[in-house]
Length: 146
Image 1 (tube, rainbow, N blue to C red):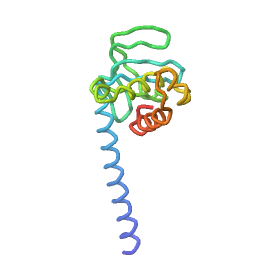
Image 2: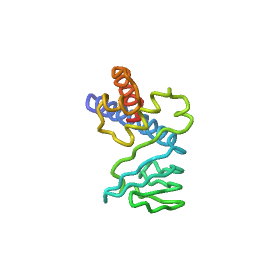
Image 3: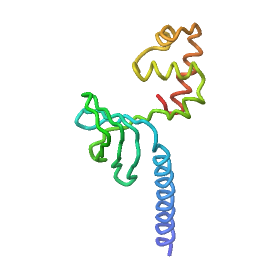
Image 4: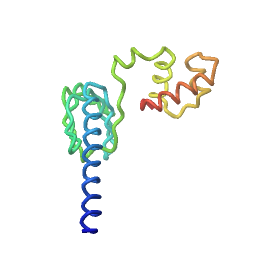
């Protein structure tokens, strides 16, 4: 009885928690549909396009209006989940519209050159307050844009 209660109870809780976190993860993935993504593949290629469909079990995805790092263009690409190294999600236009002007400028600069220091970013966008740039960078990182 002791063994069944603790082992059985633990397993039920573990499976229940795993299902809950997996479904949350799947829901977040589905919300990304419609966003522009950069898919980095294990062979070194990079594909950029609009995410139109994703298989949350295997990470297979369909991209539209695709351009790769060799400037090859395609209307549609099906990407195997096993070929994906990682994915960068670019904010949708509605999210960009809700950002302040300085957030958009900082995001644009750091997406092109992610290793710039806050002082360099400030110079590039014509902002004198480096502390404000640091705050914006921290906010963009917290929101998952950087």
